[in-house]
Length: 243
Image (cartoon, rainbow, N blue to C red; front, side, top):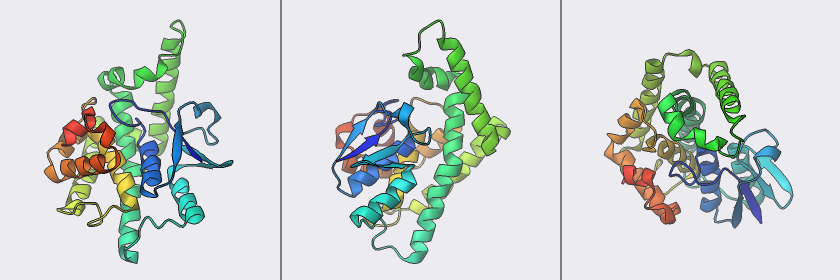
């Protein structure tokens, strides 16, 4: 059996990490049997989640997990798409993962109010005398990552503008389609759904979230994906915002 290592439910979402949600959706789309383990972070081969253990074969990174599933199980997540559509799907995936993600991360970790409502909960297990120091150290590390990537060098309003531009692109391409590329879900939907749902999470305030909420086609899309792949989460806070 495949074991998916993630954080577990958090922030009213199946997983607070959009990358973990993406990996789980790929497993669901492939109709593969799997279990979730929330105790694997310290053993993560690349120091991050998700990763999978597929009968002893360890695969880390959501995209590499997808390629592994495609190769080992003969799954074509982009079945029915032209080469041009596959290229478009890849470009949107990278926009979400390498641009919008960093805006979401900045909003959750650098905004004190958002941090107090969400990420601070990751530190519950740290004994109180050491907790403030650990929290400060990890937040500094996140700020370092953001600055090294480039997003953290921008002013907050500039980050908001960049994120909203990505939201607008997603909304325009989705249009009136049921799923991102057409009438049925394809691989890119695992990424679009995971990141847009994370952005729409009502626990966190941000101009990008407000911009996303204004688009009914995006809210309907998230609700449609939620009903199809996470029916047990139909009452979750994020789904309510997207209904």
